[in-house]
Length: 269
Image (cartoon, rainbow, N blue to C red; front, side, top):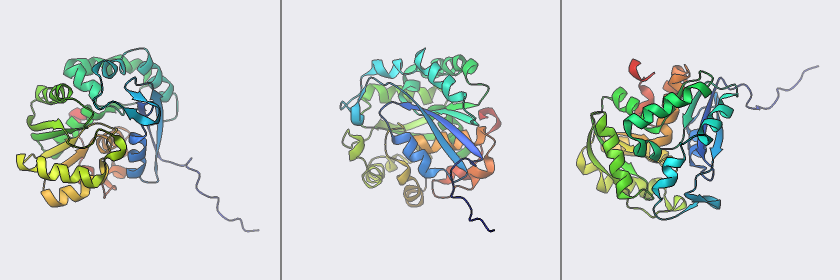
């Protein structure tokens, strides 16, 4: 008797990536799943983020206290520990602004603090992965485009963070779009980068903030403007795949930027 093959059920994923996200934010999972090939599965853990309300609503500018609180113990540590208990291959933090607030030293201390609860799984996050991406791309002159819900102070902290590592930040700022996740599209974000950022001639632009809809801008902007486009969720997946030993899988991703043709340098793995 011949049996028909069973429908795909997702259990045979060769690489499983865990991501910690704010409780009301679907952006990281949506974009990671869009980029990931069928052999990669995405698994999320959530932490309450006081700047977000049910339905993903936020104030026009997010306050700074919740940004720091998001990465303070014990909640982040517990979320990472629970996520790491799963049969995963790498972990990532789907949140950008906390690293801005922590600065280089505080971010380093954060990853050191999390080591005991990661079950020895490699872990990355937006700014850590972005630095690996810039170095892999050979990009020293960078622009940082932040979500409209970041205020000027938070944006300046982001620029200062990257300058601590020696990058030439030729532009930074909140993008001039409505401060509402649902109002941002690849088209209007691309248009804003095209008209506001391109004139600064960066070697790479980082669209920071994991809650901003951004991965749909990458291919068009790179083809049109000639510089590399790195986005928060694109870069954490790229870095996590390499940390998980799935380099061949990463190189097989073709629609989300030149970044996926590169490999992190040894210092970032």
